[in-house]
Length: 182
Image 1 (cartoon, helix red, strand yellow):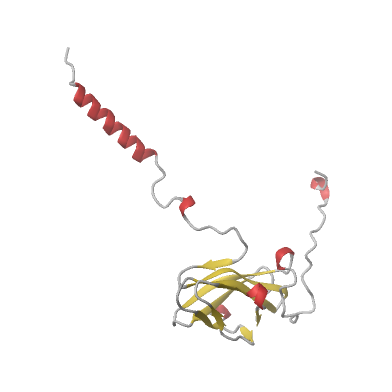
Image 2 (cartoon, rainbow, N blue to C red):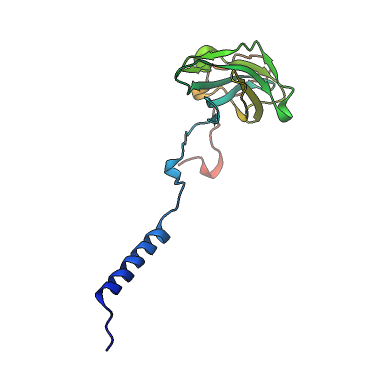
């Protein structure tokens, strides 16, 4: 009978354990390690100024109000949002009364508190609008921003009040048919 030395068995067991650990792991870039913000808006964190929760609150076809939070990641200098415009298929977006927005070092500006940016164009609730933001350091980003109705947490945030005469109804219809009573 041939017996293996204990060191060889120990080495084989250690190798099997290491291999099992590698093969049973989830790998790299775990979902729990990535930034996730469960919200209706769009986020962009690629520049010194984070754009968080960007939406266009639109109560009717043809107009809405851009709302977002700008967070300055620079701790020793103010940053600015110098320009806001439509981009791509939405390049003809009209922006009313935009003035540069200053964000103090390490601070943030929430347009829902400051008053949003009124925009007009070919969009309405449920659409996405392609926009471009340009910052004071010359960097710019493009993002697709959802146009959301002025319901729930967005109620009262659409300052555009123009467009079609038919406004969005936030009431949820009662179910009909066999699924009505549950």
